[in-house]
Image (cartoon, rainbow, N blue to C red; front, side):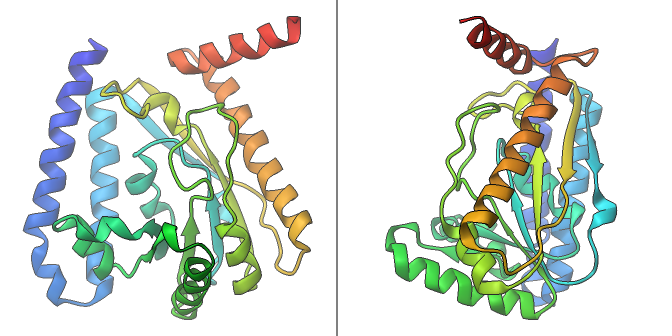
Length: 259
């Protein structure tokens, strides 16, 4: 039953996404705010479809901590779900993405229209410099600068692999930073068509003020995100409908403790 419902959602998701992209192509000629509203509606619609077809709900914790000022958002990244479902959580996010995405018809063109921050990951120091410059411009427009610090999706419970880009942004922007933990990879696993029923939790953690020394900032943000993400996995494992990966993670941790 899970496979069938997942396949139905898979079809509905890609058909609706194609309709949004092609049918919304007129938004290329309007203000960016109109295109961002289309992106927000797409995220809401696809999370609703996920609940209808697969019984997978979304819960946001800590949204009251956010305010209307520009900020830096540093989020765990476990699933493709994160790329659309997190957009409506924030006011006007400028998301850091790899530059290669801009060549994808419609999707990449919209990334340019949204004025996301596109970086060339092969240019190292030059890319970091351009990243900070672009992020400052987006923040000056009152937007949230949003980055997945590991750069790619990581399985729930995997050893963290944080890249230096989020530290460069913290130092270069001088803004309050909001860490974000989640458990989306349990319910929307990478490299799988299966979508499991349950509740995807997004947790906005306590803000970190600007101006901290680099080592302290890195310690605080990585500790906060990893500890909260670990807690969310354990919480999912104890739920009435535990996803398989959550149970496997808890068993592996228990096995390590015994040895």
